[in-house]
Length: 419
Picture (cartoon, rainbow, N blue to C red):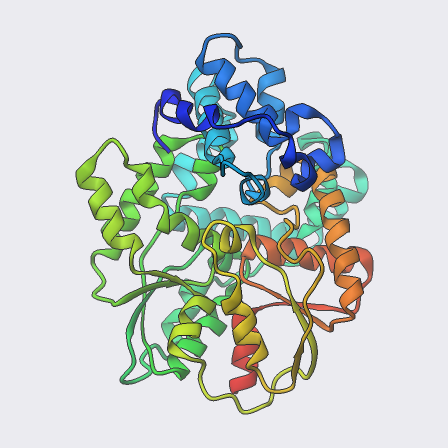
């Protein structure tokens, strides 16, 4: 995560070009283009460092089409951190060429300011919930904003007009004698899926925790993923300031992407030992939702929740980035009336990958279709996961494929079982 491409040179040089990554890359599976696979990315970045390759569209397009899912890393004999090398290449592109104004506005103006961000989401909610965007979609107006924008509009059915932070004012936050938990609120759950955040808090309180809702901003992962390291560090510093104000034993988030990036904050500050130490102290206290429950135990279930087959989708940032695989399954298997069924390729990316489904809609849908086929094989009535991007993508996939399946966060299922 350093600022200089040369910092990843040793990493890209570890790639032995064996090509084993080809069989595991969802995008190579679609394109069959060598530029889209890990060894292609590593060769490009290495050539750029060595001065044998110029920044161009041929360099940019494959680099920004990577899902950053780490499927290649998980199946790489020398364990080359291709996801880090790809981001380093993206950061170099941003430094030399710049970034679209919309992204700079998002990363530097909206994400650091939740109040301003809320105004834009409310504006979008008015258009979405009143049907204005559906009308614009039918008339083809949304195509003015991009070739796939009219289809992208359908990813979310409705947007809330009251966000979680507003709802939290009326929630019970003190569960008693349990641990004090600093709840880091992800943007997706605050602005788009506040019901999930409510479920998480209710489960924590039922388990006896004293919940402190952190006054945090975006974790910084979206900016980092698109190579804007300046914005990612600025957001990380704001969050470190906010989290240091909360006296809590655990920093918990129900967003797999947020927990992954919070744990990687130390790598953002490799050039600053003081900031790196500060970030390390924070990262050591971070837990994901099921990771926390697997350690502290679920509240006593009453058996009122869903009864039947439940399956699970591994968010890439939870499974491959953090190694949190068994814990959500343990939680789900412990719910009364649940028959847990493992889904084929449960850890294969669903195609959401942050905003990948917006910027690369066609490829994202091919990846999603494969996930829906695997879901169909389970005959499950509920598909659980722990990431807002995955939730949105999988719910869209279920609607698109007309499957009679509910897509829910693990915390929603636990709350229902304990109600």
